Length: 356
Image (cartoon, rainbow, N blue to C red):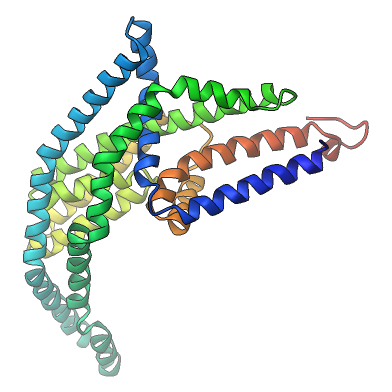
Protein backbone atom coordinates (compact mmCIF):
# COMPACT_ATOMS: atom_id res chain seq x y z
CA UNK A 1 0.00 0.00 0.00
CA UNK A 2 1.56 3.30 -1.10
CA UNK A 3 1.58 6.53 0.91
CA UNK A 4 -1.40 8.02 -0.94
CA UNK A 5 -3.64 5.01 -0.22
CA UNK A 6 -2.54 4.97 3.45
CA UNK A 7 -3.39 8.65 3.82
CA UNK A 8 -6.78 8.11 2.17
CA UNK A 9 -7.50 5.15 4.48
CA UNK A 10 -6.71 7.08 7.67
CA UNK A 11 -8.55 10.23 6.55
CA UNK A 12 -11.69 8.20 5.77
CA UNK A 13 -11.44 6.49 9.17
CA UNK A 14 -11.02 9.84 10.92
CA UNK A 15 -14.04 11.28 9.09
CA UNK A 16 -16.21 8.28 10.05
CA UNK A 17 -15.17 8.59 13.70
CA UNK A 18 -15.91 12.34 13.77
CA UNK A 19 -19.36 11.81 12.24
CA UNK A 20 -20.13 9.04 14.73
CA UNK A 21 -18.91 11.19 17.61
CA UNK A 22 -21.15 14.05 16.47
CA UNK A 23 -24.23 11.84 16.06
CA UNK A 24 -23.76 10.10 19.43
CA UNK A 25 -22.62 13.14 21.44
CA UNK A 26 -25.82 13.08 23.50
CA UNK A 27 -25.08 9.68 25.07
CA UNK A 28 -21.28 9.68 25.21
CA UNK A 29 -20.84 11.77 28.36
CA UNK A 30 -20.76 8.94 30.97
CA UNK A 31 -18.50 6.83 28.73
CA UNK A 32 -16.01 9.66 28.13
CA UNK A 33 -16.07 10.50 31.85
CA UNK A 34 -15.48 6.84 32.73
CA UNK A 35 -12.58 6.67 30.30
CA UNK A 36 -11.06 9.80 31.86
CA UNK A 37 -11.37 8.34 35.38
CA UNK A 38 -9.80 5.04 34.26
CA UNK A 39 -6.93 6.88 32.56
CA UNK A 40 -6.19 8.96 35.67
CA UNK A 41 -6.35 5.97 38.03
CA UNK A 42 -4.37 3.51 35.88
CA UNK A 43 -0.91 4.45 37.29
CA UNK A 44 -2.19 3.95 40.85
CA UNK A 45 -3.69 0.60 39.84
CA UNK A 46 -0.33 -0.45 38.35
CA UNK A 47 1.35 0.51 41.64
CA UNK A 48 -1.10 -1.63 43.62
CA UNK A 49 -0.40 -4.55 41.29
CA UNK A 50 3.33 -4.23 42.04
CA UNK A 51 2.46 -4.45 45.74
CA UNK A 52 0.88 -7.87 45.18
CA UNK A 53 -2.81 -7.20 44.49
CA UNK A 54 -4.50 -8.75 41.49
CA UNK A 55 -5.71 -6.42 38.76
CA UNK A 56 -9.36 -7.03 39.65
CA UNK A 57 -8.75 -6.46 43.35
CA UNK A 58 -6.71 -3.30 42.70
CA UNK A 59 -9.43 -2.00 40.39
CA UNK A 60 -12.13 -2.71 42.97
CA UNK A 61 -10.21 -0.98 45.76
CA UNK A 62 -9.51 2.07 43.62
CA UNK A 63 -13.04 2.37 42.26
CA UNK A 64 -14.66 2.09 45.69
CA UNK A 65 -12.17 4.55 47.20
CA UNK A 66 -12.72 7.04 44.40
CA UNK A 67 -16.51 6.79 44.69
CA UNK A 68 -16.38 7.24 48.46
CA UNK A 69 -14.14 10.29 48.09
CA UNK A 70 -16.49 11.84 45.54
CA UNK A 71 -19.54 11.01 47.68
CA UNK A 72 -18.02 12.62 50.79
CA UNK A 73 -17.06 15.73 48.81
CA UNK A 74 -20.58 15.98 47.39
CA UNK A 75 -22.22 15.53 50.79
CA UNK A 76 -20.06 18.29 52.24
CA UNK A 77 -20.26 20.77 49.39
CA UNK A 78 -23.59 20.26 47.63
CA UNK A 79 -25.88 21.36 50.52
CA UNK A 80 -23.85 24.53 51.11
CA UNK A 81 -23.61 25.37 47.42
CA UNK A 82 -27.30 24.63 46.84
CA UNK A 83 -28.23 26.85 49.80
CA UNK A 84 -26.13 29.72 48.48
CA UNK A 85 -27.58 29.32 44.99
CA UNK A 86 -31.11 29.35 46.38
CA UNK A 87 -30.24 32.46 48.41
CA UNK A 88 -28.83 34.09 45.29
CA UNK A 89 -32.02 33.41 43.34
CA UNK A 90 -34.13 34.69 46.24
CA UNK A 91 -32.13 37.89 46.57
CA UNK A 92 -31.79 38.61 42.86
CA UNK A 93 -34.76 41.09 42.84
CA UNK A 94 -33.11 43.06 45.65
CA UNK A 95 -29.83 43.04 43.76
CA UNK A 96 -31.66 44.29 40.66
CA UNK A 97 -33.17 47.14 42.68
CA UNK A 98 -29.77 48.08 44.11
CA UNK A 99 -28.22 48.00 40.65
CA UNK A 100 -30.98 50.25 39.31
CA UNK A 101 -30.40 52.72 42.12
CA UNK A 102 -26.65 52.79 41.47
CA UNK A 103 -27.23 53.27 37.74
CA UNK A 104 -29.66 56.11 38.49
CA UNK A 105 -27.11 57.73 40.78
CA UNK A 106 -24.43 57.38 38.11
CA UNK A 107 -26.75 58.91 35.51
CA UNK A 108 -27.49 61.80 37.84
CA UNK A 109 -23.77 62.49 38.13
CA UNK A 110 -23.30 62.19 34.38
CA UNK A 111 -26.39 64.34 33.72
CA UNK A 112 -24.79 67.35 35.31
CA UNK A 113 -21.76 67.16 33.02
CA UNK A 114 -23.04 65.73 29.70
CA UNK A 115 -25.50 66.85 27.06
CA UNK A 116 -29.07 65.91 28.16
CA UNK A 117 -29.80 64.24 24.79
CA UNK A 118 -26.89 61.82 25.26
CA UNK A 119 -28.00 61.12 28.84
CA UNK A 120 -31.49 60.29 27.59
CA UNK A 121 -30.13 57.80 25.07
CA UNK A 122 -27.98 56.18 27.79
CA UNK A 123 -30.99 55.98 30.11
CA UNK A 124 -33.09 54.38 27.38
CA UNK A 125 -30.37 51.82 26.63
CA UNK A 126 -29.93 50.91 30.29
CA UNK A 127 -33.63 50.86 31.16
CA UNK A 128 -34.58 47.43 32.35
CA UNK A 129 -31.07 46.02 31.79
CA UNK A 130 -30.66 45.04 35.44
CA UNK A 131 -34.02 43.27 35.50
CA UNK A 132 -33.17 41.40 32.30
CA UNK A 133 -29.74 40.45 33.58
CA UNK A 134 -30.96 38.99 36.87
CA UNK A 135 -33.92 37.36 35.15
CA UNK A 136 -31.51 35.63 32.77
CA UNK A 137 -29.26 34.50 35.64
CA UNK A 138 -32.24 33.19 37.61
CA UNK A 139 -33.66 31.33 34.62
CA UNK A 140 -30.25 29.84 33.81
CA UNK A 141 -29.69 28.60 37.37
CA UNK A 142 -33.22 27.21 37.55
CA UNK A 143 -32.75 25.49 34.19
CA UNK A 144 -29.49 23.88 35.31
CA UNK A 145 -31.01 22.66 38.57
CA UNK A 146 -34.37 21.46 37.28
CA UNK A 147 -33.90 20.71 33.59
CA UNK A 148 -34.81 17.21 32.52
CA UNK A 149 -31.66 16.84 30.44
CA UNK A 150 -29.52 17.89 33.39
CA UNK A 151 -31.23 15.35 35.64
CA UNK A 152 -30.81 12.59 33.04
CA UNK A 153 -27.13 13.43 32.50
CA UNK A 154 -26.51 13.51 36.26
CA UNK A 155 -28.17 10.11 36.75
CA UNK A 156 -26.19 8.63 33.87
CA UNK A 157 -22.96 10.01 35.31
CA UNK A 158 -23.74 8.58 38.74
CA UNK A 159 -24.79 5.13 37.46
CA UNK A 160 -22.98 4.46 34.18
CA UNK A 161 -19.64 6.21 34.76
CA UNK A 162 -18.51 4.01 37.70
CA UNK A 163 -19.34 0.85 35.74
CA UNK A 164 -17.49 2.05 32.64
CA UNK A 165 -14.47 3.20 34.64
CA UNK A 166 -14.30 -0.14 36.52
CA UNK A 167 -14.25 -2.32 33.40
CA UNK A 168 -11.90 -0.02 31.48
CA UNK A 169 -9.50 0.18 34.43
CA UNK A 170 -9.55 -3.59 34.93
CA UNK A 171 -8.87 -4.30 31.24
CA UNK A 172 -6.67 -1.26 30.52
CA UNK A 173 -3.44 -3.18 29.91
CA UNK A 174 -5.16 -5.79 27.78
CA UNK A 175 -6.87 -3.10 25.68
CA UNK A 176 -3.56 -1.26 25.21
CA UNK A 177 -1.85 -4.50 24.19
CA UNK A 178 -4.62 -5.30 21.69
CA UNK A 179 -4.44 -1.85 20.11
CA UNK A 180 -0.64 -2.14 19.96
CA UNK A 181 -1.06 -5.34 17.95
CA UNK A 182 -3.09 -3.45 15.34
CA UNK A 183 -0.24 -1.06 14.51
CA UNK A 184 1.40 -1.48 11.08
CA UNK A 185 4.73 -3.26 11.68
CA UNK A 186 6.69 -0.84 9.51
CA UNK A 187 5.64 2.24 11.50
CA UNK A 188 4.93 0.66 14.90
CA UNK A 189 8.11 1.98 16.66
CA UNK A 190 7.39 5.55 15.57
CA UNK A 191 3.71 5.30 16.54
CA UNK A 192 4.63 3.88 19.95
CA UNK A 193 7.03 6.75 20.56
CA UNK A 194 4.35 9.28 19.58
CA UNK A 195 1.86 7.52 21.86
CA UNK A 196 4.32 7.77 24.76
CA UNK A 197 4.75 11.50 24.10
CA UNK A 198 0.97 11.98 24.00
CA UNK A 199 0.63 10.08 27.26
CA UNK A 200 3.31 12.19 28.96
CA UNK A 201 1.77 15.42 27.69
CA UNK A 202 -1.78 14.47 28.60
CA UNK A 203 -0.96 13.00 32.01
CA UNK A 204 1.20 15.98 32.94
CA UNK A 205 -1.46 18.47 31.98
CA UNK A 206 -4.49 16.68 33.45
CA UNK A 207 -2.94 15.79 36.79
CA UNK A 208 -1.03 19.04 37.13
CA UNK A 209 -3.86 21.32 36.02
CA UNK A 210 -6.36 19.34 38.09
CA UNK A 211 -4.26 19.98 41.19
CA UNK A 212 -4.03 23.67 40.26
CA UNK A 213 -7.84 23.85 39.99
CA UNK A 214 -8.27 22.18 43.39
CA UNK A 215 -5.81 24.52 45.14
CA UNK A 216 -7.26 27.64 43.51
CA UNK A 217 -10.84 26.59 44.28
CA UNK A 218 -10.00 26.15 47.97
CA UNK A 219 -8.02 29.43 48.00
CA UNK A 220 -10.79 31.47 46.37
CA UNK A 221 -13.60 29.88 48.41
CA UNK A 222 -11.83 30.44 51.75
CA UNK A 223 -10.61 33.92 50.82
CA UNK A 224 -13.98 35.19 49.62
CA UNK A 225 -15.83 33.64 52.56
CA UNK A 226 -13.40 35.18 55.08
CA UNK A 227 -13.76 38.53 53.29
CA UNK A 228 -17.49 38.40 54.02
CA UNK A 229 -18.87 37.88 50.51
CA UNK A 230 -22.25 36.19 50.81
CA UNK A 231 -21.75 33.75 47.94
CA UNK A 232 -18.01 33.30 48.30
CA UNK A 233 -18.08 29.50 48.37
CA UNK A 234 -20.07 29.23 45.14
CA UNK A 235 -17.90 31.74 43.30
CA UNK A 236 -14.73 30.09 44.62
CA UNK A 237 -15.83 26.66 43.38
CA UNK A 238 -16.83 28.10 40.00
CA UNK A 239 -13.51 29.92 39.65
CA UNK A 240 -11.57 26.81 40.66
CA UNK A 241 -13.36 24.56 38.17
CA UNK A 242 -13.07 27.08 35.34
CA UNK A 243 -9.34 27.47 36.06
CA UNK A 244 -8.92 24.29 34.00
CA UNK A 245 -9.14 26.77 31.09
CA UNK A 246 -6.06 28.98 31.56
CA UNK A 247 -6.93 32.47 32.90
CA UNK A 248 -10.66 31.91 32.35
CA UNK A 249 -11.51 30.93 35.92
CA UNK A 250 -9.76 33.94 37.45
CA UNK A 251 -11.45 36.38 35.05
CA UNK A 252 -14.95 34.95 35.56
CA UNK A 253 -14.48 34.75 39.33
CA UNK A 254 -13.15 38.31 39.49
CA UNK A 255 -16.09 39.74 37.54
CA UNK A 256 -18.69 37.78 39.55
CA UNK A 257 -17.20 38.49 42.96
CA UNK A 258 -16.51 42.19 42.37
CA UNK A 259 -19.98 42.68 40.87
CA UNK A 260 -21.68 41.04 43.86
CA UNK A 261 -19.39 42.89 46.28
CA UNK A 262 -20.41 46.24 44.78
CA UNK A 263 -24.07 45.31 45.30
CA UNK A 264 -23.52 43.91 48.81
CA UNK A 265 -21.14 46.42 50.43
CA UNK A 266 -21.62 50.16 50.75
CA UNK A 267 -17.89 50.88 51.17
CA UNK A 268 -15.13 50.37 48.61
CA UNK A 269 -12.58 48.73 50.91
CA UNK A 270 -14.25 45.26 50.90
CA UNK A 271 -14.52 45.46 47.10
CA UNK A 272 -10.80 46.19 46.83
CA UNK A 273 -10.00 43.31 49.21
CA UNK A 274 -12.08 40.88 47.15
CA UNK A 275 -10.42 42.02 43.93
CA UNK A 276 -7.03 41.62 45.66
CA UNK A 277 -7.88 37.99 46.47
CA UNK A 278 -8.17 37.19 42.77
CA UNK A 279 -5.02 39.09 41.87
CA UNK A 280 -3.21 37.12 44.59
CA UNK A 281 -4.69 33.89 43.23
CA UNK A 282 -3.53 34.78 39.73
CA UNK A 283 -0.02 35.43 41.04
CA UNK A 284 -0.09 32.15 42.96
CA UNK A 285 -1.17 30.30 39.83
CA UNK A 286 1.30 31.96 37.47
CA UNK A 287 4.43 31.99 39.62
CA UNK A 288 4.04 28.97 41.93
CA UNK A 289 1.38 26.41 41.00
CA UNK A 290 1.61 26.20 37.21
CA UNK A 291 5.44 26.16 36.99
CA UNK A 292 5.74 23.52 39.73
CA UNK A 293 2.71 21.31 39.00
CA UNK A 294 2.24 21.66 35.24
CA UNK A 295 5.52 23.00 33.92
CA UNK A 296 6.42 24.05 30.42
CA UNK A 297 7.65 20.69 29.16
CA UNK A 298 4.19 19.30 28.35
CA UNK A 299 3.97 21.34 25.13
CA UNK A 300 0.37 22.58 25.49
CA UNK A 301 0.28 26.33 25.09
CA UNK A 302 -2.57 28.07 27.01
CA UNK A 303 -3.93 29.64 23.81
CA UNK A 304 -4.05 26.22 22.14
CA UNK A 305 -5.87 24.75 25.15
CA UNK A 306 -8.42 27.59 25.18
CA UNK A 307 -9.07 27.19 21.45
CA UNK A 308 -9.41 23.41 21.74
CA UNK A 309 -11.90 23.63 24.63
CA UNK A 310 -14.03 26.31 22.94
CA UNK A 311 -14.00 24.46 19.61
CA UNK A 312 -14.83 21.13 21.27
CA UNK A 313 -17.69 22.68 23.23
CA UNK A 314 -19.10 24.39 20.13
CA UNK A 315 -18.98 21.20 18.05
CA UNK A 316 -19.85 18.44 20.52
CA UNK A 317 -21.13 20.13 23.69
CA UNK A 318 -19.82 19.00 27.07
CA UNK A 319 -18.44 15.79 25.54
CA UNK A 320 -16.32 17.98 23.29
CA UNK A 321 -15.04 19.88 26.31
CA UNK A 322 -13.92 16.61 27.92
CA UNK A 323 -12.25 15.43 24.72
CA UNK A 324 -10.65 18.78 23.89
CA UNK A 325 -7.46 18.40 25.91
CA UNK A 326 -6.68 14.81 24.74
CA UNK A 327 -7.27 15.85 21.13
CA UNK A 328 -5.12 18.95 21.65
CA UNK A 329 -2.33 16.76 23.05
CA UNK A 330 -2.52 14.38 20.08
CA UNK A 331 -2.57 17.22 17.53
CA UNK A 332 0.27 19.00 19.33
CA UNK A 333 2.52 15.93 19.36
CA UNK A 334 1.66 15.17 15.73
CA UNK A 335 2.41 18.76 14.69
CA UNK A 336 5.81 18.72 16.44
CA UNK A 337 6.64 15.37 14.80
CA UNK A 338 5.62 16.65 11.36
CA UNK A 339 7.64 19.84 11.86
CA UNK A 340 10.73 17.84 12.89
CA UNK A 341 10.40 15.64 9.80
CA UNK A 342 10.02 18.74 7.61
CA UNK A 343 13.11 20.41 9.08
CA UNK A 344 15.10 17.22 8.46
CA UNK A 345 13.87 16.86 4.87
CA UNK A 346 15.00 18.25 1.55
CA UNK A 347 11.88 20.44 1.45
CA UNK A 348 13.56 22.60 4.11
CA UNK A 349 17.28 22.19 3.38
CA UNK A 350 17.11 21.60 -0.34
CA UNK A 351 18.82 18.84 -2.24
CA UNK A 352 22.24 18.37 -0.67
CA UNK A 353 21.74 21.45 1.54
CA UNK A 354 22.11 21.70 5.30
CA UNK A 355 19.47 19.97 7.38
CA UNK A 356 18.19 20.95 10.84
